Length: 215
Image 1 (cartoon, rainbow, N blue to C red):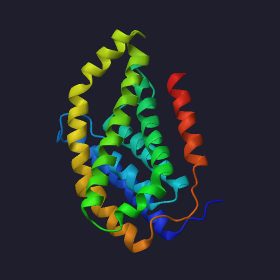
Image 2 (cartoon, helix red, strand yellow; image 1 turned 60 degrees about the vertical axis):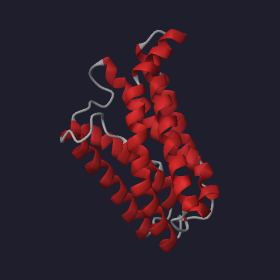
Image 3 (cartoon, one colour; image 1 turned 90 degrees about the vertical axis):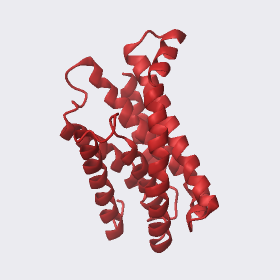
Image 4 (cartoon, rainbow, N blue to C red; image 1 turned 30 degrees about the vertical axis):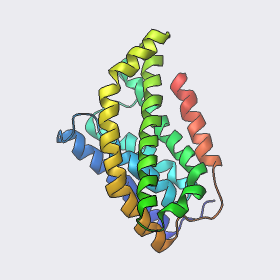
């Protein structure tokens, strides 16, 4: 059994609620030109850094599923195109897993806001966006385009405007939300619930979602 401390429960609910409300408002109010993932991306990073890794995997997946339902995106039902949601969910699971393994190495960078922490958070923001966009582009190619090099090239060319926007907004979100939060909360309360790297549950969930993506 995972021992749930009050801090873990509080942050888990807070992060999930912010993901759901933030994405719902951004999408339904037309605040941004593309479906919003940035708020969930940065909170995925914060969940891994500030929560037990076994709990962190639940936060972005729950945030995506609930916000999809609220904004009217069918979850793997209806039209064939809706199957892409499994790739979007597994994309966040992949980010959680990567960040879980990198957590111990990057934690020392965020004890305070400094030149090193700014450079680190910008690098993480760019990496998260690129990994997520490459993975979901592969999903579009696998599901809806010819399985050829030309088909793959077409998908990445069509996805370029979204990727550029995603990079700009994602980096901004990581810098102005992710960095202050992980520095303040992490330095004040300890970076995680446990000192042990708990990668098994994130790895299992990620593998299951990846398999479902291609089935």
